[in-house]
Amino acid sequence: MFALFWLIDTLLGLVKLAVFVGVILSWLVAFNVINAYQPFVRSVLSFLDAVTEPLLRPFRQIVPSLGGMDISPILLLLAIHFLQILIRTSVAPIFGVYGY
Image 1 (cartoon, rainbow, N blue to C red):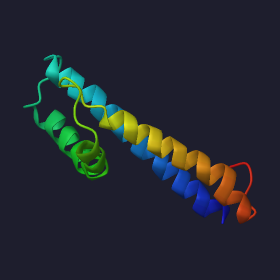
Image 2: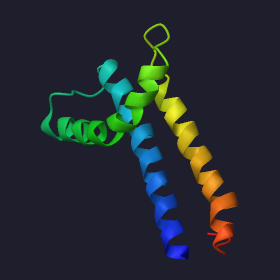
Image 3: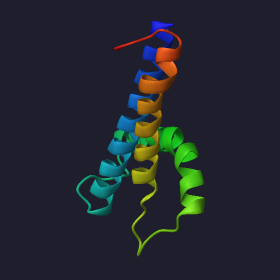
């Protein structure tokens, strides 16, 4: 059981990292720091979009953009962090898994 909870927690952490990197890259593209037409950058952006967009879509439908600023990644990061804390403190101890 320890391995299962560790795997779930690690996957949630990787999704948080993907959201954070996607936000940073979108800012860099918006301010013309990196060129989105380069093949490597395009492939990274399309991968991050494929991973994060299905998770961000429900938040974007609920919360409209505020003056052109999209706060759905912040809400997704908060939701994932809440889920990690819930698993660590409430769900895992039920199964006898502590301190991972």
